[in-house]
Image (cartoon, rainbow, N blue to C red):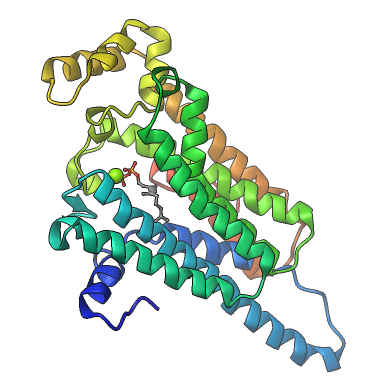
Amino acid sequence: MVVSEVPKLSFAAEYFFKMGVEGKRFRSTVLLLMSTALNITVPEPPTELQELQEALSTDLRARQQRIAEITEMFHVASLLHDDVLDDADTRRGVGSVNREMGNKLAVLAGDFLLSRACVALASLRSTEVVLLMSRVVEHLVTGETMQMTTTSDQRFSMEYYMQKTYYKTASLISNSCKSVAVLAGHQSEVVALAYDYGKNLGLAFQLIDDVLDFTGTSASLGKASLSDIRHGIVTAPMLFAMEEFPQLRTVVEQGLDNNPANIELALNYLGRSRGIHKTRELATKHANLAAAAIKSLPKSEDENVRKSRTALIDLTQVVITGTKKRDAPS
Ligand code: FPP
Ligand code: MG
C-alpha cells in the first residue's frame, strides 16, 4: 500500500513500517480489538441468512482493518512531517527520515502516505467515515500549529494544552474508533462510546507521554528526554507545578533551551511540586473514563467480544502504568 514507482519515495514511505522500527502498533491493536468488541451478533439467524451474514461480517472485518491501516499511515505521515518541523535527528531509536534523506523527501514521503491513505479511505465508500477521518488530518495540522504559534497566555493555559492534546493525539484514535463503529452500522449510543473510549485513551496516553518526557530515559523513549521543555513546549506537569509555584512561569518565559541553569531551576520547582503526581492523576481519570465507555457497551455473551473488551480495558491500565492491573476486570 505504501510502495511507489519511485524507489527513493518507497524507501522513505516504508521506512517506519519496517521490522524493528514499526513502533508499538498501539493504534492498530486498539482498532482491531474495538472491531471485535463491537461485534454484537444477531442471535441464531435463519439458516438461509447464515451464509449471507458470514459474508457480510468477513467484509466488515476487512473494512475495519482498513481503518487500522489508514490510521497507521496518517500517524506515520504526521511523524515524518513532525520530525522535519522539530528538526529531529532520531525516531524510534534510528535516524529520522529527514536526517537520513533530507527534509524535502521526508515531507514528500508524508504527503505520499497521506494520499495513499485517502485512496484507501475512499475505497470504503462511506461518506461518514471519509468525513470523520478527514477531520483527523485537519486536527493534526491544527494541533501542531496551535503548539507552534501560542501567545504567552495560551502557552500557560491548561485548557489550551488539553485542546491541543486532543487535536494532536486523541483525535486520531477517537475518530478511528468511531469509524470502526460507524462501519459496523451501530446506533449512535454505541458509536459515541467507541469515540469516548478512543478520546480518553488518547488523552491518558499523551499525559503519560508528557510525564515520561521528564522521568523517562532516552533509551526507553527512543528520543531525548526533556525535549518538550527544551523546545519551550509547556506540558501538564509544568502547568500543574506553576499552580503551586507561579514564579516557575518567569523561569520558563526566560527560555530553557541552551540554558542549563534555568533547566535545573525549572526541574527543581517541578520536583518540589505535585506536577507529576497531578498529571498522573489526570491521566488515570481519563483512563478510567475510557474503561467506563467499554463497560457501558450493550452486554454480549460472545467469548471473543468479551475477551476483546477485557483487553481494551486492560490497555487503559497499560497506558498509565506500563503494566496490566492485577485486579483488572475480566
Ligand atoms: C508528534 O509530536 C506529532 C504529532 C502527534 C502530530 C504532528 C502533526 C503534524 C506535523 C501535522 C501534519 C499532519 C499530517 C497528517 C501530515 P511531538 O513532537 O510532540 O512528539 P515526538 O516526541 O514523538 O516527536
Ligand atoms: Mg516531534
